Image 1 (spheres, helix red, strand yellow):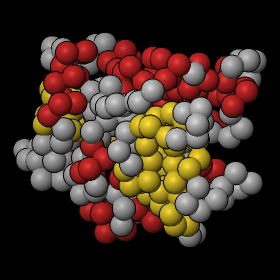
Image 2 (tube, rainbow, N blue to C red):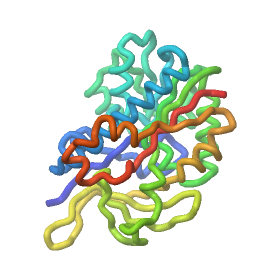
Image 3 (cartoon, rainbow, N blue to C red):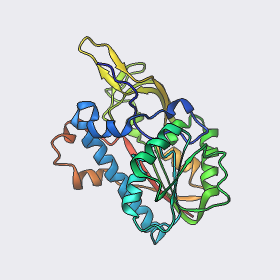
Length: 286
């Protein structure tokens, strides 16, 4: 059984690997988990942590945000849907930008355009007309920025768009996900709790690099899935301090607390989850 046109996450916002932008059928993947319930429950847990990040950001801001930007929005499944649910009375349309026209179209089909201003463009070059945002979000964006220069450019761009007391919420790979352990081998195809497969190519203190795909291993051991795409998983503390601490007061959502409060008795997710494969970074302009 081959798996076509399925991937996971939001597409790039420019400055990184444009080849990683075809996050097709993400909605279907999140709903059925390629037939494996553990993936569906794991994404529910990840979403709950992201919403906790939104709550924490609002607390830091001291009010509901009225000017919101979602970077690398994809079709809206990873972030935008939760913003729309949380802020139904937001006075302004939410700006959602992605470089992938197909994802923008799917987003409009799912969420309409009454409350969302969909922008098909590269966030690094798009003219925002000096607009400033109370809240800037990005889910699975920074792991497609492969060099420190690309990360610095994105941080500068976000700095230029953030309002005086603005807040950010980023979802990024965790240190546990990228760090070698008993199941980690170089050039070995590893099935992740996130639902995709990774083949790790490089590891150092700052980052780990892999290629990833979404698919299935057949009974004969062969693999069929999407095209392999490059990903760079930055150490979360290095990422936060190196690229954002100059202008943002950074903290992280306690993902383990969320797990213990809401998922510790979930019989399905507990079978496959040892440590969260993601971190939710929250920050306020300092």
